[in-house]
Amino acid sequence: MTSSIRVAQVGCGYWGKNLVRNFAEIGVLAAISDGHEPTATKMSVDYGVPALDWTAILSAPAIDAVALATPAAVHAEMAIEAIKAGKHVYVEKPLALNSADAGRIVAAAQAAGRTLMVGHLLHYHPIFNHMRKLVANGGVGAIDYVFSNRMSLGKFRTEENVLWSFAPHDVSMVLALVGEEPAQVTAQGAAFVTPGIADWATMQFVFPGGVRGHIQASWASPYKEQRLAVIGRDAMLVFDDAESDWGRKLALYRHGIDRTGSAPVAIKAEPEYIEVARGEPLKAECLHFIEAIASGTAPRSDGAEGLRVLKVLERGEAALTASLAR
Image (cartoon, rainbow, N blue to C red):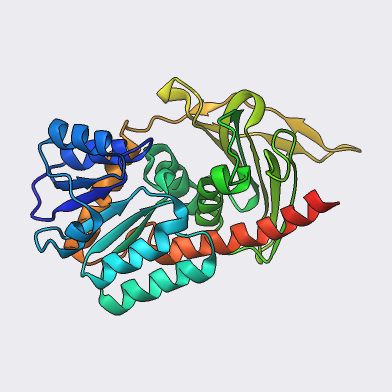
C-alpha cells in the first residue's frame, strides 16, 4: 500500500511490536516510541525510523496519526492529548478503563474531526466478517442465542480480571452479531488464583428483541478454547478460532427438531465447513485505520463502538463484583 499518511507507534512491547511490523509493512510507519530504551533503540534500527518521546511525536507536523499500545490506565490522557495535537488515533482495547473516560475521548475526536479507532481485532478477522454477513443475510434464520467461550491456561493477571482481559473481543462480536445493546446484563465469577481477581467469569445477556447470550472467560482452563456460536431457527454457525486448520474454522450445522411426536427429537446434521479467503486480521485492521483516515469515514470499530463495549463490561463488572463478595 502507498499512502501519504504517517503513523507513530507508541508502545512497542508484547502487542505493540506487532503493530510496528504491520504499519511498516504497509508503508506508513513514521516513528516509534517506547519507555524501555533498549526496545526503542532496537525497533528504531530494525525499521529505520526515529525513536521519539511523546512530546516530540505530538509536535511533529509530519506525523498524522498515533497508535497507542500502552497501559489502559493512560489511554484517555494520551488519546485526548494526541487529538488536541491534531492527530488521528488508534487505541488498543479497551478504549479506556471506564465509560466516562471513553466518552471524553469520543467527544474530543468528534469536536476535532479526527478519526478514532479501537483495536477490536476480531472485527477484522475474515472468518468473523463472513460469519457476520451470513447472519445478517438470514443464513441461520432468526437468532435465538449467541455464546462465546474464550479460555486458556494463563497468563495470570494480578491487576485486571479475566472479564476485562479476555471478554472485550467477545462483547464486541456479540453486539455486532445481534445489532442491539443488551437490556439486561448479569455476571458471576470466582477468584481461585489471586484473591479478588476473577480468573473465571461468565456474563449473560438479554437483548430487547428477545435474543439471549452468554460469554465465558477463563485463564484457569485445562485447554484452549476460542469459540463463538450463533444458534438460529434454521441453522447453527460456529467460529472456532483455536482450530489450526483454516478450512475448518467456520462450520454451519443444519440441525433440526422433529416436533411431530410426543416429545421433540433432535435431527443432527454433519457440519458444513465454509471456505473463507485467508487474511491476517491485524494487517487488515491497520489498513482499515489508514483507509478510514484517508476517506474520512467512521472505522468499523470506532469510538462509539468502543464505548458501547465498555458500558456492557461495566455492567458485567458490577455484577461480577457482587458475586465475588458473596
